[in-house]
Length: 110
Length: 115
Image (cartoon, rainbow over all chains, first blue to last red):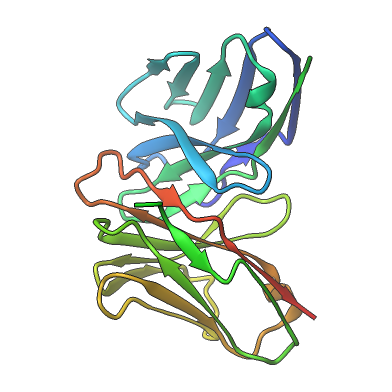
């Protein structure tokens, strides 16, 4: 559960969709999460998905989970400049340890 | 309630000194977590408390690190004999046992610089 990987950077134009990807290794993960970190601010939970779900939609956010490939993605529709931040995926194992990815820095170009 | 608070926000110390950080969780939250975050990395789990009991510690946690939560409310993280590699942001988070899916609320962090 300690190898959670993300691509480091993503750049999109305002109004386009952003897709941030994450791979994880622990098949016993119960929940998977997406957090947002803006400069100088703490991490904020954006959304989560339970491990027995394939998809979850929450307003502009869509989370897709492929358990077979241990792949998680976050799609942000109609990306805005305020969405520029670092996005972390995280997994929670059966205990209480959380493992975070390295973070993807999203830049939205006006 | 204003959320999770941490004190101090910044700490500069010389190598070999001891430092102590404090975290005040959201008042009704019985779960408390400490993480370390270095530049360009995600938070790394250090330890977890449920009420006053320290239930989990990362096996990566050096013996120089100790954490307490004596009354099940605020928590302290102490680093003894600091090393330059300890320079990082130390994050605290809290959650409620009743919360599904264990939604953690993070504090602003304490940035430690060891010179």
